[in-house]
Length: 113
Image (cartoon, rainbow, N blue to C red; front, top):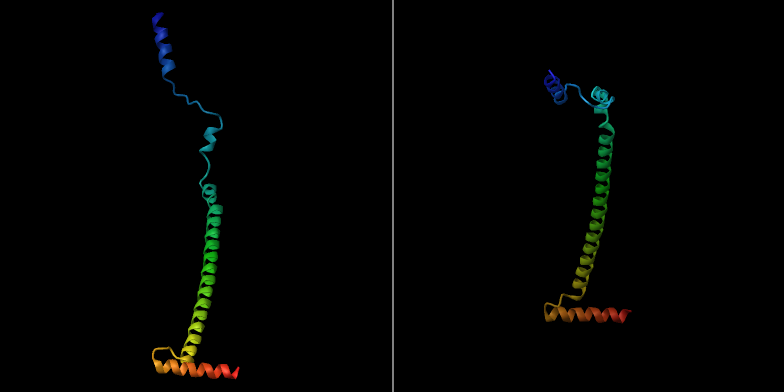
């Protein structure tokens, strides 16, 4: 009989059906699903706000770049127009006659000033 209780004790120590956990752990799993989905709303709103801010900033930068490019193109067109006026007035020096005509125009302008 003495051997029998030790076997029973050994079985009891190896197999148990009781769970060991802190007393508050079972209450954590009973949370309803409503508030869990609501916790994603503020980060989602923040993400949308940041995305809108980045898009608005980028659009502003593009408009500034286009304005600078447009101003540069206008300046280049004005420079070309002035060069064409000078080329018409003084000739493009493509032939001797045009060069002689340009010299006469230049000397006439120097005499007037």
